[in-house]
Each structure stands twice: as C-alpha cells, then as structure tokens.
Amino acid sequence: MRALSLGSVLALTSAAVLLAPGPSHARKFILHDDELAPPSFALDGPALGAPRPPAGADVRAPAHLAGGSLAALADGALVLDADSGELVRIDARGEPAARLAIAPDAAQLVVDRRAATAYVSDRRGDGVVVVDVSAPAPRVRARWRTPAEPFGLALSPDGATLLVTTVADRTLIAFDTRAGAERWRRPLGAEPRGVAISPDGALALVTYLTSGHVDRIALDRPASAPRRAVALGTGRVTTVAARPDAIDAATGGHRLPRAAFAARFVGNRVAIVPHQVSTPLQETGGRENVGAYGGGFEPPIHHALTFIAAGDAEVPRTVAAQIAIHQPRALAWDPARDRLAVAGFGSDSLLVLDAASQAGVHHVADAALADRTCGPAGLAFADDGALLVWCAVSRRTARVAVAARTAAQVSWGPVLTATRLSPLEHAGADLFRRGNDFRMSSRGAMACSSCHPEGRTDGLSWRIEGHTLQTPILAGRIADTHPYKWDGGDADLTISLPSTMRRLGGGGLRKDEVKALAAFVERAPPPRAPTRDPARVARGRALYGSPELGCATCHGGARLTDRQRHPLASDLAAVDTPSLIGLAASAPYYHDGSAATLEALLADRGLVHGMADLGDLTAAQLADLVAYLETL
Image (cartoon, rainbow, N blue to C red; front, top):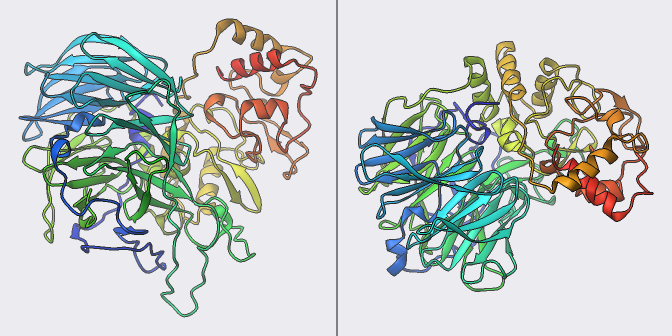
C-alpha cells in the first residue's frame, strides 16, 4: 500500500464515543458482561507513583524525550504526515503556515525547541532528516544515514544525543547531534518501534510490536550492558457476574501483551507504555468455542497501560491498567500538570489521566473525536495545557480543552495534506483499523489491525475452529496469492474477508465495504528486508534454487507461492502454500507457529514434515540459506 504508511492508516475507527468525565479512582480490572462497557481506567493493583507531584528535572522534562507525529511549538505545532510525507507547520488555529517534503512513510519527529531543530525519521529512505525550524518555513539542514528502516526517535534532555530505532535492521543508534556523527549502536529484538528517554537522561525504553516486553537500557553504558527486558502487564482479569448464570470464562489462559508502539517517561521515575493484550488460547474449564478466535467465550483482546517503576532495580515493579480506548498508540505527558493523554487509534477517542506519576493517578475524562474519521496518530500538549491531536486519516488537527468533570471542548483545523490513497483504498484503510464495530467482531473487540498491526503479524498462534493457527503477514502477500486461509479453503478475498469476520463473531460488511477492504490490503507494501552480507545471500540463493532442495518448486515465481494445497504431515488435511514475501518479519513459522525462528524451521522443522530434506546441509550452508530467506 503505497499510501498512508501502513503504520499510520491501519487503525482508524468511526465508532462514536460520547464526551464524558470519568470516575476519580479505580483499583481493579473488571471484565464486564455484554450489556456493559469496559472501564475507562482500572488498575490491577496499587499505583506505582510517589505520594507527591513531580519536581526537579521531571517538571522541566521536554517533550522531545520521545518522538511522535506531532510536536508543539510556542506559536503552533509541527505535524508529520506519513501519508503524503510532508512536514507541516501550523499556527495556533491549526492553519497551515508552511510545509516541507520529507518522504512518504516518514515515521516520527522530535523537536529541540531551544535549538530550533527538528529531527525526522525517513523510514523508506534509511536516514534522519535534520530540519531548521528557526524561520517560519522549515528547511533541511542535513541528512544522516541509518541502518534499514528508522522509526522511533528520542532526544536526550540536553539535546546532545538522538536515539533512533530501526525496524528492519533491529538496531538502536545514538547520534551526536552537534557533530552529526554516530556515537554507538546496539542490537535490538524483532520489530522494535518507539523509544523514550527518562527526564534525567539515565535510561531509555524501547517498545516492540510482537513481544510482551520493553527493553530498559542504561545510557551510561549502552553498548556494553545487556538489554534488560521488562515484562508488560498481562492484566489478570476478574469476571464479575452481572447475571446469576454468568459463566467464568476469563480464568486461565495466557494473556500476551503486543503492539507497543510508544512509551513515555513521566515524573517520579515512572514510565508508561500503552499496548494491547491478547489471549490466543483461552482456557474455559475444558470447553472450547470453536466459533471464536481463541476458543473461549469472552473477547480475546483488551487494551492496557503498563506503569513501570523505572529505577535501578534489577526487576522493576510494574502494574497494568485496563483501558477502554481501542488500539492505544500515541501518548503525551504535561509535566507542569502531571497529566497524561492516550489516543485510541481504533476508537477515535482519548483517555486523560491526572496525577499520572503519583500514587493518586486517576481518570479525568474520555474525549471522543466524534462525527469525523480521525485516526489519532499524534498527541502533544501545548504550552497553555490544551491537547493537540493529529488525525492521520482525516489529515486534520484538533485542539482539545480538557477539564475534570466537564465535557471536553474540541476545535478542528482544516485538512492539511492530500492522501495518496484512492477513495476505495482510503475507505478500506478506515475499515481495517476500525474498533468497536460489531460488524467486524463480537462486541467490536477486535479490528483487522488487532492481529495485523501495520498489516503485519502479532507473532501469535491462535486457537481457531479447533486448530492452532499462526497469524500470517498480510502486507505484500495478498495480491495474486489466492486461495486464502491456512487450509486454502477461501477462493478469493470476497469470500475470505467475510469468513474472517464471521470467525470473529461479527455481523459482516456490505459488499462495497468488502471491496474497499480488499483494495486496501492488496496494495499493502511488504516489510523491509534486513541488511545481509551479499556473498552469503548469493550462496543461499543458489541453495534455494537448487534441484536438490527444491524450495522454489512450491515457493517460486514473483509471489513465491505455487498457490496450491499440499497434504503435509500436520493437523490440517492440506496446507496452502504461503508466500514467503517478508519472511524475516513473519515469525513464528509454519501454519501452527511451531518453528520459532528460521533456524528452527530449517533444522528442526517444528511439527510440520514432508517438505525439503535439509539434513545434509552444513551449519554454514544453513546460515547462508537463512540469510537469503531473510531478504525475500
């Protein structure tokens, strides 16, 4: 999809949520019955914050300690539109004042207001664009090369060090902003996204799309110290019977955090990470609901914030809070007021908390960006305390005035940029990310992008219709790869998309909406391949194409699939040949996810047998073959 970067558009919702203040405190997760809405904010234990407001460096913390697609200025804001690739300067009314072409799919920006400098990650162009914002019209000052696919940005408190995450090459890089030179780099896990720095400059957090942890990195020894993984909250859920015959269907099962796009340090050495929590294999007292994702009787996905006591402890304390907004991906903190705002990318709604870093953290209000298709992808607090919102789908900004116990006041700016999507694709993008839509899933709990964030995979294997099935990548793999589903049972997308909605418990879409959704997913670009040694890749390519191995017999051609079903020794009678496009980003492997890595796929073959015999390959040849497969 060469349009609104899949990271920006795969999450839009048109569900209307009323503007309403919330309760002051909540201390327990509650899974509500069908007739009740989930709680706006409910902690799963005692809050981690201090009994006092933040002080010292905390209240001087600049917004550039974590990146996003929106940054406040003294007289307006800078907006980064991944769709058009434009950096737009707006005034205090939201009117465009100047614009600068960066590149389509540009991911994040941070602004050093003291130095009048913005830094923008060019995701497609593999670099950081340094922009002078001292004049009304921004201009490019420099470009710094990065490994493949830069995404997350964070600037140290003094502005001297810029941290950059790269998705395809899985690295964290530190740049000396004064010299424009790389200071150090270190490896990261698969699918890194956001990065945030603490107000004292001592720590950094890196978030991930397909794992249940964040990395905590000590910045005084970043290249040599091991990554400290901090588990995100899984949110043990208590079922409260709203009726005497209500069943306890939420006990048991592994709840796995996923889709952590961003993090933010707040005061009192506390960090906050918004994310999703999935239960792909529900335990329900020996019973299985074969007509639902996860095999259980309750929605298998909810959304959460994890609070992390980000001090020096070997294992930091954490506590999770269930939240009602769908697909939380952007957040902002106001140090002067200790106020936190989180945007629901799939619900067009905002959650606002006060005393965010304190033991008395509490819910202030829910604000709906109603009557518009927004897709809130960026948040920032203006100097006067108003909340600025960037809507990546409607390409507008909103200014939201939030006060406790009163309805939020929302004022809208004009459309800032033009989408690269066709009208049909744009409608499909809206549907793909739509949460709270009962036509898509039971209770609207799941959107397409719940399991396929950015059109990719959540890295999970789900219990579906009595089988354990891995979430495949959609991006780059849909066009001309029919039939669909792991058993190849759906001849085309007009059959496959509605059947997925039925599996999810949804009522289904109109035919024109199915057509729009199909148009969107068919245009989704494949994940970027990591950088690999060319000589090793060439040797691996020769092995792949050799008649002895025969890999290309089934995985050949432009789409890397023969579009056939094969009776492999597995729990399915026949398995559809998947495309191998984007293979490096699609772990785990095989239809059942039984091979965690490509190395395991080639050496152990998981629980699936009947394909190529690789037993005679040496360790070096296996490594060459893996290197080639990762470039597909």
